Length: 313
Ligand code: A2P
Picture: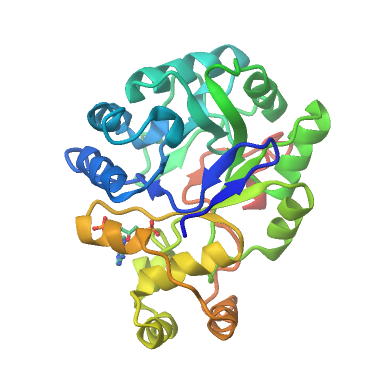
């Protein structure tokens, strides 16, 4: 259990990781420390989570006394306002300083969308909605080229997140360098079979974020669905374990978020999902709608000739 999966470049990613998106300040550091003491070896981070400094403090407490740096797998992600070639390595350096490490194991382009330089998040002033300004003058290929040129001493592997087939094709065909990972929201309600097949064909490993369905419209957690609960009951497991096992059975690495000690432990304790239950979960696809990935915010302007194809969402 908690096996490692070998990526296209030979690096290995532990199957179960700790998600830290929306982990509250004051809680996330403790969660990381507890998780590592429990055996977690894969931590999923990003500049935009705004909690890397606290996680860095936690890492100091466990490296090297509990775990050696080389036995940890740390992911972080480039935020949308630093997509220009000149900014990519600078933001990586900020991330390394915040986390207090010399390198990350995996560095991802967080979204296939650029914001204006310096605009960490740009909320449109006369709108109550979450709207962001997309800077269409930056080409995704520019960003990816800069990613490919990052020093190997600072990044072991590079990949993408929230990328569609077209985005991946665009950067890979232009540069000849394929991402080794695409991190996407993935769970029984959001299977995206075409994207999965494409990734498989090109040896792009999928990391599933929000495996418990956090962020779904309506805010209902997948752990609350009767079909999931029924399988959990039968297996004498928690609904979350069933959902994590589902992602693992598809070959994904899975990064559930928790800051609760008991739930951290539950999520790290893998259960075997029988084929028939896997099929039952797979059959949920389409039953509750939301079969396509929805970008969680709209864009203030999106000209029809966008190089960054936000319209596909
Ligand atoms: P908490 O941090 O209090 O445990 P996702 O990873 O899909 O985004 O889901 C994260 C959400 O699921 C968080 O609200 C988290 O709350 C909750 N959660 C994490 N682990 C479990 C679990 N084992 N059972 C139920 N809810 C969980």
